[in-house]
Figure (tube, rainbow, N blue to C red):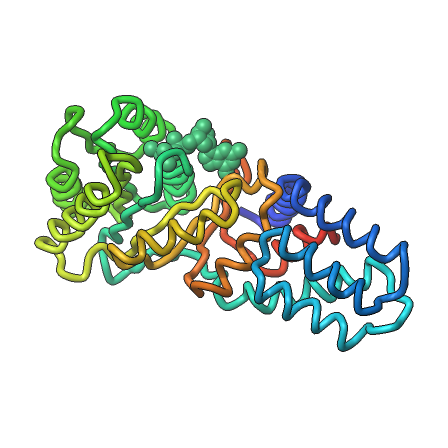
Length: 314
Ligand SMILES: Nc1nc2c(ncn2[C@@H]2O[C@H](COP(=O)(O)OP(=O)(O)O)[C@@H](O)[C@H]2O)c(=O)[nH]1
Ligand SMILES: [Mg+2]
């Protein structure tokens, strides 16, 4: 890829990111505009700003801190909403920068084994397909394991992604043990010298306890081949569920060692601010974000781009 092509792809992504986050940014923007047309930045306005930030899913403590920081520099002054948004965007960038970490395959571990988990419907299988596309485009050989052995549709869906990305898919009959499938897939990926193994998992079993037990078993069994595997354990979260994502992180992180997050459906959500509260509360790396159903709609998470888009800035 030459430099010009690279820039075009990048600017294409930026405008889609802005478009995708427009539900979140338009609500924030409108509220901040309304706030300032009424008056100077007095105590009541600061308090209202704090409420706006809370309702935009930034989290209570972050909302308090950000509005205090606005208060300390702008209190009692004539301020434009553009100034407020710019200050917020740079404060949010600072919060997000430490956790915006791309998922680079580890060359020491071949294949780099990635378990992908999350509740039903958050976008696990789609995200795996998108990741497979990104890695194969970089010349990596990828193997996909259809570990959601619970639903036929899930296996077929992964097979389609396998065809699209020229990746081998390891699957079994419906209802078979997901852990033994993951084991077979790992052996196969080793044999074929694949660089990446992506393991899909079920999001719904009889109950939460069973789901967590299955994930733990998958990990235990994989470790029989390589005691440091899986090298990544990703939790996929659906941004439209807002603060519910927090309890999902708690439940999964309680059962297994989550190494990073992927947040999907930011295009359909007005709750994009939830990334900020997730960063503040858990400090887990956010590797990538999803802003649509197309293969190219998953990209590495960039703090500054995201913060500016969230605030509706250029
Ligand atoms: N709008 C939008 N839809 C998405 C995104 N990621 C996944 N989806 C859709 O969400 C639905 C559930 O995705 P799926 O991958 O099957 O979820 P899973 O149950 O966690 O495996 C599908 O219709 C996907 O196309 C995203 O970033 N944006
Ligand atoms: Mg699935």
